[in-house]
Length: 239
Image 1 (cartoon, rainbow, N blue to C red):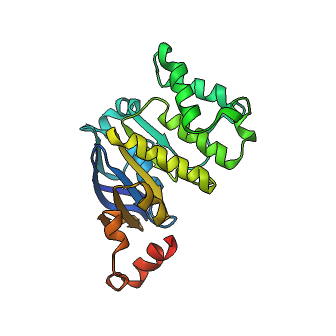
Image 2 (spheres, rainbow, N blue to C red):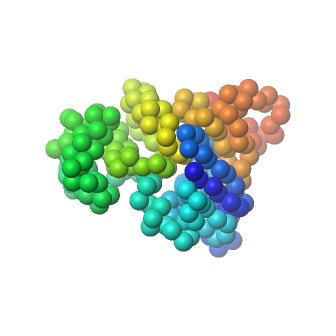
């Protein structure tokens, strides 16, 4: 599971994440909802150990990210913003490279690669260099590298960004399929995305947690119960 405790992140005098606390259990898919600049990506980078918090603590499977970042990364999958790196590599070479650095057993490397190729429909681009792929295919390769080692913790920043409607549907179905025995956080600024795949929705704005409940309860909120600012930067932008 993931437990975020009183998390803060500041850059000089600018507060990006402000006293954020969340807990996500096994089998849950948390939709991290909010406008651009809300602090979603920064929070994910701290949860994955790529950024150090200004204060607060993060525990993953009862291990502190401060003390056990290397160990945690072994069972964590991360899809960051943007496209996969190493654009000069072909899709096939890139996936083989990731499988090896992830320490997948030699006897299981081929089956692990074949599984993500099949799940993300990458067969037609295996011999193409990543830098020559469309934005949608780059995103699918990014998802492939995040799940190739079958991680128990999965952090995905805008997983369907750049995908067409059919591709979005396929990725959402994949997230549902693998979520039963995993702890998953996905960020988005689209309410529809949360409603489609998530068991919980958390809304942040200006680094503060504004809402943490089920997607269905979020949908049923009376707009009159939200102040104008909250409505404009969350629900209003998402619909």
